[in-house]
Image 1 (spheres, rainbow, N blue to C red):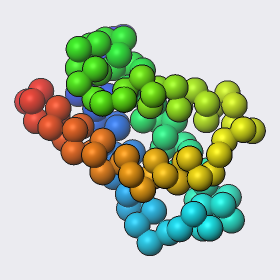
Image 2 (cartoon, rainbow, N blue to C red):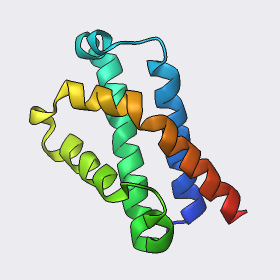
Image 3 (spheres, rainbow, N blue to C red):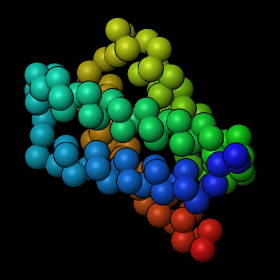
Length: 114
């Protein structure tokens, strides 16, 4: 069954919103010391990357409208396959700097699909 672009974008939106919510009052120290928090964050990044990967396959033009979509997919692959070399600072920097712009772009694209 083919994947729906709107569903993929919705999955990304929900994952980003969740990440923003659970990290709003947290720090890098929290991320490093709380295995449950770290696991939740990494899982949501995996979902974001996989949803973008699916979107890339079914609607490359739509996926390319998301800045750094290829890097996001690559980040998902690192989290999944190279979990033992993940740099906590890199993950936390992404949480702090890249999630809000990604959410804004995904919301814009979802509105455009309606």
